[in-house]
Length: 99
Image 1 (cartoon, rainbow, N blue to C red):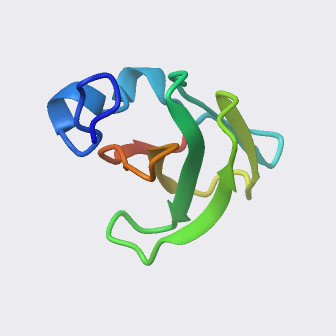
Image 2 (cartoon, rainbow, N blue to C red):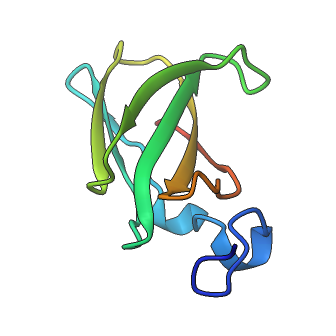
């Protein structure tokens, strides 16, 4: 069953827009902000210190459009964000680099 006739696995219809997913590092924290659609029941945020991983789950919470991640100033972190709807359909993954 498709929610609102959109396939959550289709990169065209449900991709989290990279330009709306930002990750600036300030004061030993990375503040991540992202778009939230009303269909999302949770967001999963992963972090790595290398673009190819390994990836660590940092947060799996109700979507509110932001997450403050503890960080070391001057370090580069890579993030992946995935939205999940109430039927456990998953969006394509959005990627962002801190800094």
